[in-house]
Image 1 (cartoon, one colour):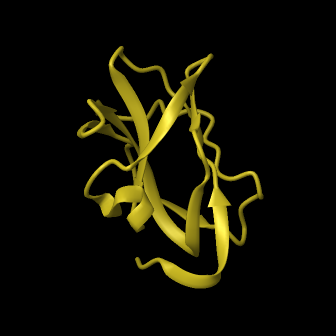
Image 2 (image 1 turned 90 degrees about the horizontal axis):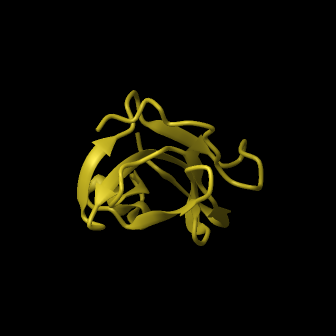
Length: 110
């Protein structure tokens, strides 16, 4: 599945609830350059009370359609777990303006 470039720029925020072991962090990885092109963690989420991980800043998307997954990392480079199941697919034309939200990622493998 390919990303679709557009003339529109989207600002996307991510939010996910997941309790992690100390020293681990959540990130978003995906098919776009600013999400690491599935190769490396580049978009890190920040922990907030209640084990909710949120975007520190919106990610700028120049495509309205792309794939992504949540991943657990250590030392900002080592992937220690991926969200289970098929890749998430976003169609920003259909998403609310506030960005993505996932209530729970209990399906994350570690």
